[in-house]
Amino acid sequence: MCAKWHNDFDPAALLAKLGTRAKVTNGKASFEGFEIGEWQAIIDENISLHDEIPSIESSRIVWKALTDCALSTNFSAQFFLRAASVAEGTYLSQPLKQFYLMTSLSIQFEKDLVLPAFHGCRLILSRAFPKKFDRKPIESNLRWDFRNRPLPENYTQVRVAVRGRTAEEAGVKSVNSIDLTRSLINFQINLTKGARWFSGRPQAINLVAAGPISTLHERAGKLADEMWWFEPDYIEPAKLIESGDLKKKRQNEVILLRLLRSHPYRKELETLFRQYSRALDELNYDYAIIKLWSVLERLMATDRYETVTRRVAFLYPDFEHHRSILNHIRRYRNRIIHGGHSSSNRNEIIHQLRSYVQVVLLFHLNKARGEKSIAERVQLLDLPFKLTDLRKKRRLIDFAIRFRRG
Image 1: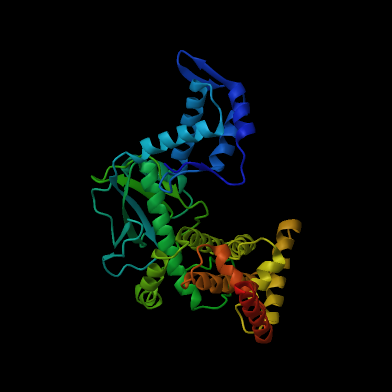
Image 2 (image 1 turned 90 degrees about the horizontal axis):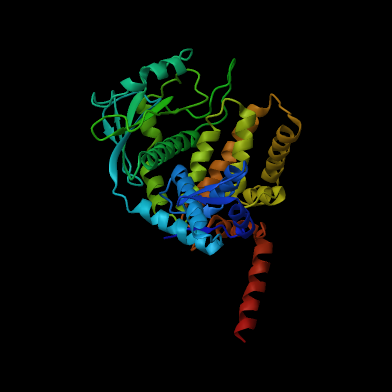
């Protein structure tokens, strides 16, 4: 299997500590001490397992490997990885089962629609869920949790058909799928609009909101588990976006999906699309600015401010002008974090930053020339901005090639 340690993590000292706390009684392993949970969490965050293994199952695999180490009195990093790989293989050998995630989007219903399958998930849009999908066991809990918040009555209902080994795996896959779909829809809408002004309570920049409740069901319609996902910041139903208007703005969705499917660093880019969208769900624009700047840093493969601003500005003809605006945004973001600063200008700043992130997402989305990672892709942006300087550098590189050839 593919269990491995992160490159910058040395587990030897921590595993040795765990070895001193291990105890075996009647053939069963356990660990003593209040720190055990914290130490396991460190290992959880520094081991890589198969992409389809959800975080809750990853924790179980780590615990199984630790108990195997205790039973064998061997806490070496190599033995732990072998034990984790065996547990990983056991999980992955389980058969796939059919599940359905039931959720909704703030889109005006027009007609039943099946969206293109992505990552093995198929999205089905309808006016109402088929009657076999039963939420009755948790209805009283839902009424209590949302007692002061009206639930939407006219959102478009969305079923995500997904296959998974466990309910947890199916839940993670389907939530990620609907999150990515919504992020791409909002991305296309946001490309066509400028800043928004409002009075009263701030509004989310994204027009397509996620429904407040999502539940996972077995093929026959029964709840897979008496749990549900909910939007923690939900207050009231969002304004519906008209389906006709949405259809016009989604004309490029097939192209976006095709580019993502074959992209060399698809997983990282999909994650950043989701984070971009989640940032623009925020009603607090200062929080949104912090989150969006973090997305920009990851897209530029650095958290060095001067490098981020220079690389982003390279994408624009007026380099100095845009670097000045980016430094203005950077300073505002730093004042939020370090001094709790806020300003009425945050509305303009969030839209400026949103525009830059969108341009950089498009830069990455377009086919790379052989680059296999974000870090490789942004090397282009470290070249000189002026054409005269680029030509000078090209002459120097050409000379170096001739020199090396002899």
